[in-house]
Every structure is written in structure tokens, then in C-alpha cells.
Length: 419
Image 1 (spheres, rainbow, N blue to C red):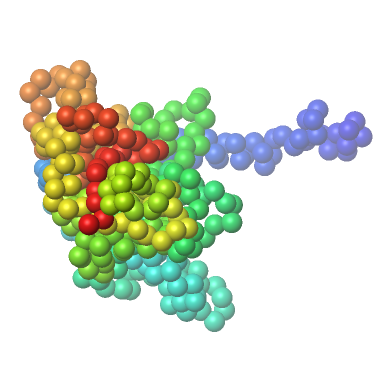
Image 2 (image 1 turned 180 degrees about the vertical axis):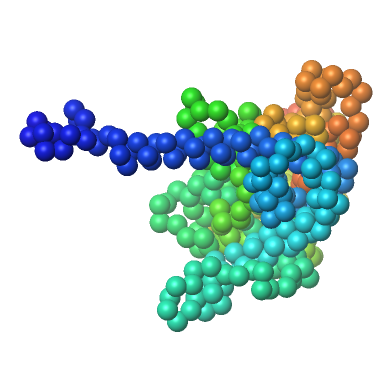
């Protein structure tokens, strides 16, 4: 080591080079970080204006850009990158174009999801059509701007698909692909995602945080109440889960609907209940009478995937009498809404203080404490997260023992007959 240092005085005691390139690299890294922080600080006025724009559009179920998507808008980026002093009046010419920007951005992202699905479902077309492969094998991106929005085809393609987020529910096996096997469910605990609610899945606009605790937080990215940073919307973490899709298709057919066009929202409105007739789920009393477990369609899909992934799908729809028994044990709509964690603070939207969805009471309490708002109004001070699915809330009912939990899947024990 001494001889090495004698020949090269730019090495320290550990033999690691210092000064020169290393010093320049550290300096450049620091400058880039300070530039990012300055950019985020300058973006605060336009983020606040866009927050007001989105709140003025409530209620809505369409996909909306986040702060990072907004700051990537060419006109906004040009102003933020300039040396001019910035306040809300600086963006007076940008605000009227928000509608146009949002529509173009949304069409682009829906196309991105559509082609993500097509790419992962048909590997043979990947090079020739979807990622712009050329003769010299240099093309690895697809120019979405050259395509017209296919709004009519998107619901048709998406309605029969079930997605799983790789961030929320990583596969059991390390040998994974973007399309699962149709008869093999490679997840321990999965949350099925359906169109259009999949568009607002939080992980699509979140990234892992790599910021050291000693560094100042980037206000565009940092979220106080999440373990991830805010990012630009990206659908690449979605897997098309064919095993769940097969179960969903069977449940939709059982409900008398068309699997090619029936969405999750349409299934929610049907309010149908299903019983699993797999022998492992039944308790026989006599030759014709048995106890089965009633589940709504969402819980039915998840139950079969987790409990009988290799068996045939053996669900039946429940009779009106059996459904009435189940409904008598559901909470009234007013009580049900109070329990659902689907509500967000409109004043914290797109800011570092943005919180995860919570119950109405929790959000109202937050508004009272943090914003001094005592009389909070729905769709003004707080709102329901877009495309939140309709989910039944279970109460004890007259027979508290009728409610059982399998894993995290609630169901009701119902007496049925084969006659």
C-alpha cells in the first residue's frame, strides 16, 4: 500500500482515490440535488393552482395527473427552468390550458396501459409492432404519439382482465413474467385490481425513496405519511393475472353477464351473492341440506384463488331467500359508508402532507385539527377516492355467529338445499 501511495499520491490511506474526478463527482451530485430542490420549490405555485383545478372538478372518476406529471408538461417545465421570479400570476397563461393538458395526458396514459397489456399478452408481437423494432436492432421504444387514442377499445380490452400490482403483492417465485399462468396462482396474498379502479391504484404513482435522512426532502416527491415517494404515473408494475381473470370470467357468466364487456363497477351494481360448493367449504346436515358460505363476487374471486387454485370453479348464485338472509346481516348504507376508508383531504392533495385514504370521521377530524375547518363539506374539503369499489360492510346481525373470517375474506354461513 505504501509503495502504491508513493507512486500515486492521489490515493488515501485505504487506497481509494480522492480529489480529481471523485471530488468533481461529489460536487456535481450536490449541485444536481440543489437544482432539484430549487426546481421543486419553484413549482409550489403551479402545484397549488393545479390542486385548486382538480378540486373544482369534483366529483370525478377520470384519471388525473400528479404534480410530477404536471411539471413534465413542456410549457410548465420551461417556466420553472427559467431564471424569472415565479408566483401564481406567472402561470396565468397556463391555467386555461389545464383541460387540454389533462385530456392529452390521460389519453396517452390509457394508450400506454393498453399497449402494456398487448405487449405482455403477445410476446411475438413485441419487436415487430409494439416497441418499434428496426433492422439494426436499435429501436427499443414505441412512439405512442404516432397513434390515435383508442378510447372505444380500452374498456372492451380491460373489462375482462384482472391485474395484480407487483409492489403490493410480489410473486412467491423469483421466476416471474408479466403474464401469469392461467391455472397457477403465484401469489400468497393478492389484491385483484379491475378496470377502471386499477387506474387510481396508488403504487402506479409511487417510487421507492432513496433519499438519505440527512438530506432535505424534495417537496414534489416527498410524502410525510407514506413509505414511498411520489412519482410519475407508470403502469409497468402491473401483471395481467390470468388465473384471477379465469375465475372472474366464470363469476361474470354465472351472473348472466357478458365477460367481454362487463366491468367490475357493473358487477358491483348487480349486488349478487355466490356460494362455493367445493366439498372443503360445505357442512352437510342431511342428504339435501347443508351449510355454505355466501360471498359477494369480489370475495368469491379471491376465495377461489387462495383456497382452491387448482380445482374447478364450483360457485352457484344464491336464491332470493338466501340473499335476503345475507342482506339482513349487512350494515345499512349510511353506516357502511362511514366505515369505508375511501376518503381524502382536498386541502392536502398533491402536497407532502397528503395522507392515505381514511374514514369520513378520520378525515373530518384531520380537517378540524390541521386546517381549522369545523364544518367540512363533501367534494369541497374532502372527497371520495376516484373509482373506489363498492364493498359490503358486515355487521353482527341477529346471529353474530353467522359471520366468519377466512383469512381476510368475510363471509356468511347460509343454510342451503340441493332440491
